[in-house]
Length: 243
Image (tube, rainbow, N blue to C red):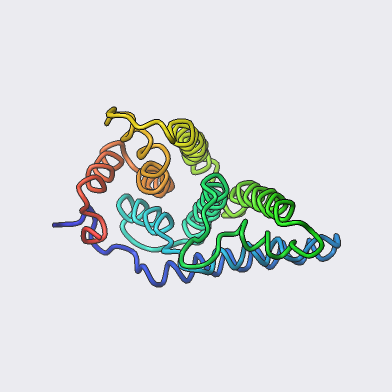
C-alpha cells in the first residue's frame, strides 16, 4: 500500500539519534547523582533497560508525523521530543511489569527482578522481592518525571509547546486509564468485546501510534486534515510499508 507520506525518515538513523539523546541525558543524571552521593544503579539500570531490544517505535512515528506535515529534515527539536516519548514508554513498561509480576522483558529479566537480586544480600526472599518491586516503581517514576526534560530542552517555540503539551498530557492520562481498566478487569472473563477493545486502545494503541503521530505533526503546525490522514493510514497499516 502507498504510504501517507513519501520520503519517510531513515529509521536506523533516527534510532541512533534518539539513543544518543537518551544516553547523554542519563549520563548527565548519573553525574548529578554522583555529586549528591545517590545510588549509581538507578541510572545504570535505566540505561540498561533502554539499551535492550527497544524498537523506538514511538519516536519513529513521531518523526513520521513531522514528515507528513513538513516533508523533510529532522531538527533537534523533533529528535528530543521523540526521545521524550521513549522515556515515557520506559516508565509504562517498568510499571506494567511490576503490576503483572512479569519475569522477563525483551528476552532479559524485568527490572524489578534484577533489583530484587541486587538487593538480596541479608534479606529474606520475600523482603528482597518487596524492595525490588518498590525500587522498580521508583525508577519508573523517575522515567516518567524525566520524560518531560528532553522536551523542555528541545528549543521548541512557544507555539510548538502550546500545540504539543495538551497532546502529551492527554496521552499520559489515557495510558493510566487504560492500565487501570486492564488491572481491574483481570480475572473477570467477559464477552464484552467493546470493553476489551477499549482497554487495548487506551493502554497501548493510542500512546503507541496515535499520539506520537499527532505530536510530531503538531510540531510542524499540521492541519486537521493531516492529523486525520495520519490516523487513518495508521489504522489501515499503511505507515512504514505496513510493518
